[in-house]
Image (cartoon, rainbow, N blue to C red):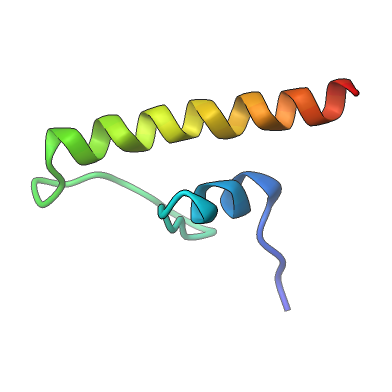
Length: 54
């Protein structure tokens, strides 16, 4: 069984489910959803950076 990466797990905790192989935005996504996804990706990256720095 494949495990989610720490990034995927962090995104899932924030309500964003990512596939392992391909992810994309489409016309079905609102600008607000895209902005939220980008903001949450930044949060996850920062939390992972902080976790590896300690």
